[in-house]
Image (cartoon, rainbow, N blue to C red; front, side):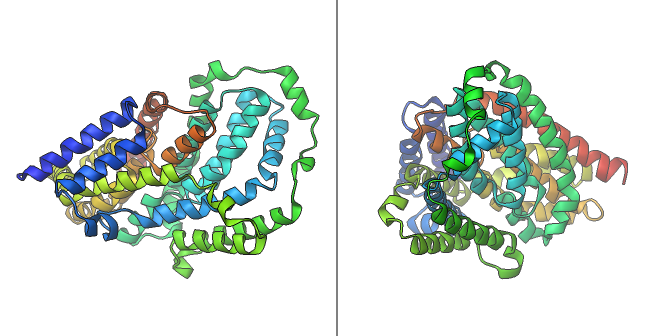
Length: 432
């Protein structure tokens, strides 16, 4: 880092980050303002910011979000989320913690099959309705579900976008993730549910009258448009199949989501302006600004410098390399979105793998994936799912501040990363 643009880009990013976490200005204004300054000082340019797959806006993420937001917007018109909300409350007997635990497990399982962003887009509307029915604050439930989505996402190749990057670079398969990380995901989900039982205990206020009122409802009466629901579920099933069959069909998730959104709008006859009105445009703008800022740090060599320092510090020792990569990935993924971080760190990890050699080289890839996925829980901008949920909460007039999220996110990250470190050590070093 011997050029002024590197230090200037670091200063701009730090200033934007301060504005985001203090909420002195809206996070979208901070991100877009920071992106504009990065372009103005030459830390990045229009070609790198808008067209580079390495250091620019990740259009796959943007269009995946847009497509799924459109599909969810159409489904919302059918009453299916009201149906699911009543069903969940009934199964949990109206008890707040039981309902939270049920929604968390559903979220974790769904995040293993879909990507975690798609999952929270589907679960968040149900959660808001559940909380409204039971007169509960929605923020603890939404935060818990974000944690569950990021934990559940570690289980499979398609569960979290960083996993796709790791798999592509390392030549890992869907089954590799199932065998090596799915067992850990089950353990971490159980631990997370237990942690949420204590972290959010003051919010579990049982309203017997509200619970009885919901228990008396017939969830089937909530479905207002059965025909549209059928169309929406068929399209959603096709989209999910497209995600799962990615290794076979080779369509990017963004392409699958946009095709599904276009098909649903075409067959349902819903007004396009109404569907586009359901898109969280401020969230997409925030992502664009964040991608440009992080891309500038990549272009000026800031992130690469940090990565190389990590590689030099471990000295090629297998266990030290694994633990350092796990810890550093968790910390850095809490500060920058884990997608561009993993894209930057993948070639450095490949060098570490060659240095460490067999049989422990592949463990470095699991350390990178775990650190990036779990570190994303630490702050409100650590993972894409976090940003999406904060946008949904704000739109529904139940905003979640950066510090509210982080106050719970840091303990969850510390515990889950510590358990992951123990898992990697025991499975690949102690018992190998």
